[in-house]
Image (cartoon, each protein chain N blue to C red):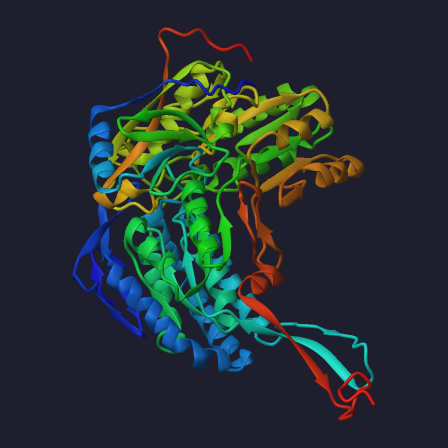
Length: 119
Length: 499
């Protein structure tokens, strides 16, 4: 099992625009990556408060820092993380962006340049 | 009953202070059938003001409700239970229409909702507390159960009739008042059951219902200082966020947040029982259960036989519109859930898992209109993302283990700890697994699905906080007040004056 804190994070243009807008409204926001658990598709949670200390900062999307739950970074393969956006007419997550009818979604994309990490 | 679209499907309204009504803005949102994409009906789009009005109503109703004798509260719940039982077929149809599960499964769920209401109705004649010996003569020391106040109950869409009852009923029978915020995919089931509670005689303001988006309604309810206890079942990160808010208010909470549940199939397991049980626990409700057996850990001597029998049996299950006769597995609840399943199937393949069955969206025979996915079985290892994350769909992974010890180690090697299970004929092995599996629930010779209302349920590790059901449910919604009753009327030696 490999803990990989150097996972590249990218943001789709739509997600980047949204994060810029939300950051202007609430300068302290941060994006947390973790398992969605029961009933949710997102893997991303946007909040105004800082994360709990055990989260690892793994990058940023413009001015918005991105943190990840260490257990979520357990992986035996090489993937890039891509923050994307999709429309959700009514959503029950308390992630900040959902009030705008959208949901940040995390997509793992196979890296074209990095070799798989050996387990 | 106000209706819209499908016959016998209500238009969802709010219930605030005993009145069914639209939101204060008059806005509503569509409720879709995940099997067809059709709009089933609409529900009131509650606002932050509606959420506050609901909490205010619950606060006003609390003093009187908390003084109603518990047995009398139980009688109201008993009437509600009877009404739910009398309307099982109608409610089950609403569940299938807005959530998607097969109708027979929906009927079973609604019967469990009934059982929960009936169980807690009975608690009205128990609410057991305790008496302890006093250090002094002629003195009685005992505790009383006191309700907490206003309970906010935020519930998910996957069991829209049953899970709300797990929290609403212990809260009510203990003398609390309730604000229920159901999932936005399934507001109609909650509305219909609220109607039946009102018909049963629940006093105004004691049970309130607010529908609408979690980011507004859920957040407003959580940030309301008048809420004394908050129960939430749903996304892990939303639950953690709510937990942080609850800590700021020093508020009681119950959080149930997910699972990645292992089913161990030991080398001596009876396949004729283990295979159908594994099928049911992996694929019922299209795998959209926090207790789904999404990891099946099989000892190598039985691996080939189990895998062949499991895949063959899974291939025969019928996936389709849950209202159609013969359908055993319904759709995912929405496009987001379907997309997530597709992403994880891709991750599994990219990580080297062997796809044994399924792996694709279903689009034939009209299923392109809904959110259908093939039942999907992987063979792989526990360090793959498909083994670590909760996919919440019809996907399971078979993981080989050389020994029972290794199987238990694999079972525990995940962030969650909700349900677990083992199939074996060896009771010593079973009890070793019971003792060592880091989960709040362990089934022996049964898949990790099939919670009974009279026993506690909840999670360890990142699966949550607190316990629901059974007596534990009452603990969540009461605090104990200790009474020291001195009937000696005597001056004790340590009282002043000492001479």
